[in-house]
Length: 246
Ligand SMILES: [Zn+2]
Image (cartoon, rainbow, N blue to C red; front, side, top):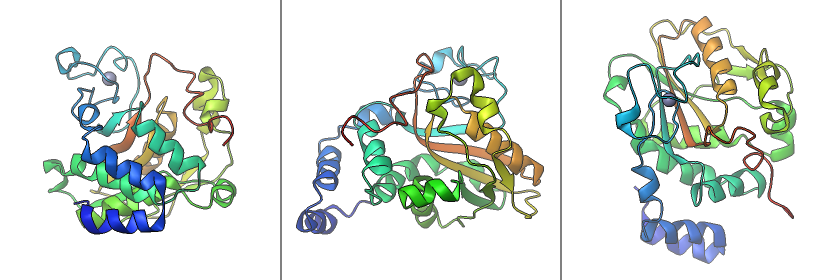
């Protein structure tokens, strides 16, 4: 899938030290223990599969969740967290493709066979996109769509600029993102949508997107993220803020 020899030579010729680090990590299998770690398929929290019931785990059993299942690559911890920070805050847009390649194998699901299926990235407000230069969720979604031969569709739009969730106290996060995302005039009756984001923190943004997709008639939603933050540390300040000096 990664086409190591040619791409590795290319990236080293291009002199991108981060890309070379990524291939080194893959060669050494550094991310593999994270990929195989148990997690709750309802909320994505790291937890033994023996502690997960049909209604979820201890972290999510009292939560309202509007997706059918969540798929993740890893908990939000090194090296994945370093790569996400590089994608979001160091203008290294190529990491969108590389992280998408990590996510794709987790989405080869039998439940995708039955319904018409589309991939939808979590939308970004135009002002933030202008600041960053790209929507990292769109980059990841484009890569997954290419590999799975599924259409990537901008089914949702940001209709209100909101502060980053990490700059809002946890109790206000649902209010912060409410009515920030709106539907496009598309009929999704009978469709399955794979909703893609880079990181799940509280889940308020994903839930808000799911509500809109359901209002468009969407039948099933699979949330797919690169990493899930530890629900025991719900300030999430280290996740959406660039490290010092960046
Ligand atoms: Zn759970």
